[in-house]
Image (cartoon, one colour):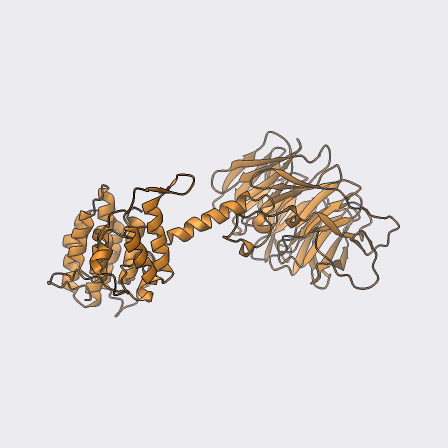
Amino acid sequence: MGGVEDETEPSRKRIRLSHEVLRDLANGLSIVGSNPDFSGDLMARSLPIKGDEEIVGSKGVIKRVEFVRIITQALYSLGYENSGARLQEESGVSLQSSVVNLLIQQVLNGKWNESLATLKSIGLLDESIIKSASFLILEQKYFELLDDDKVMDALKTLRMEITPLSINNARVREISWSILFPVKFVHVDSSNFSTTRAKSRAKLLAELQKLLPPHVMIPDRRLEHLVEQALILQRDTCMFHNSEDNVMSLYKDHQCGRDQIPSRTLQVLEAHNDEVWFLQFSHDGKCLASASNDRTTIIWEVDSHGDLSVKHKLSGHQKPVSSMSWSPDDSQILTCGVEENVRRWDASSGECLHVYEKAGYGFVSCAWFPDGKSMCLGVNDKSICMWDLEGKELQCWKGQRILKISDLQVMNDGKQIISTCRESSILLLDVEAKVERLIEEDQAITSFSLSRDNRFLLVNLLNQEIHLWNIEGEVKLVAKYKGHKRTCFLIRSCFGGLEEAFIASGSEDSQVYIWHRGSGELIQALPGHSGVVNCVAWNPANSHMLASASDDHTIRIWGLNDLKMKHKGPANHCNGVHYCNRKTDRGETWL
């Protein structure tokens, strides 16, 4: 024990592992045998296959032996050791070969020389795998010798066994420090080497499992992984999946209906006096902010029933409000007038906290840095500036950085700024590395939207297309969405739904369009507005709530068809539509 090798011949009797060790082995490496009715030899040797059926299943793609092995592994991972042993006996298919079982026993017993010899007898063709596996075993031996204060034996192992492998030289230098700085005596805090000592032998086996080919050692929890893959594939190919995954069942193929997509107007919000240009939900989904040509921004509060009501009407801009941005903690909001000033508001009280101006210039867009202590502002001289909350300009990126009408986003890590820098180009500016990347389109860009995970960018184009770009690493166009109408107005789109599986957009034909993000298929066109739909916003905390803003001065809140809304006080609605903050004589019919 402790890395000292027993000179006696290792016992051929199969050992029984505890449930704790089974878990440490990642539930897939156990040499089982808690049932006394089954002998060790039975578990160790490969039994002849009964019958001549090599393929199972109606499609002819599942190999019987592989299928039985992963089922056996699953039984052991669930703790059904007797059932796993019985399956091996009845099927004649062993979970592991006798050689692999022997290797596992030797590793668990600390028989390092024997385990190295057994490793070479498995029949691996790739010499690099043998060397890497040997390195892991010898590293474990080295650390266990150190833990037993056998420094000279450890040094011998390092010099005579590990170093001659001629691999992973950086790790060799790293572990050699453990002789000079034993963990039990000195705590060394350095990024140059690791003070990690001997891991459990079960964890060593888990590492070997990842390294060895799958036919030698079946990957951890293989059956669970295959089932999860099937469920995820069904979910991803389901056009209307917009509910939590816990509703998915193994008993039937998964398929959602259209009733999972917001398609019914639940409220019409009528507090603006002119065209509504921009919408944005707070990060927690408890508020919606709307910006209008009437020079105001309204903060709407979402109650526990999903009803929206006016919380604050923010007035002060002398020009129409074109954009806004919630602070990372949703406590404040920035609003930007058209080539005017930027205002910072307290979202709770509605108080204007600060007005930001730049002499001789106007702002065209605004965004928060993730620390909540600084802002990113687009200026109509085509520059982008970083300001602190007190109004001090901290940094400015001059040149062709932004257009007069442009969206502006800051990545969650605060390292990259995204803006429309030219008519058909989007700039991804890495402010830390000082590197610029471009998304080049063939058509003029009207707006863009960033996904919550910051991996994708949704770009609206003049030619009535919406493009989805992957912006991780090298930018790549991955999807196109068509069907909405856009000829002369600025139309915005957004990601939304469960895991942002849908794309929604406004349109000049007064409808809201919804596509399935993965397939690009148009799945809904929602009528209701009587003017151009300028902007849409999907509630990040409620996959069944969608908002749309229109030139008809209204905001529509869309929900599920079968959702029964409860309204307090006298009903002022028609056909399930609830009107807020302005009475109307106009009847409403939803188709």
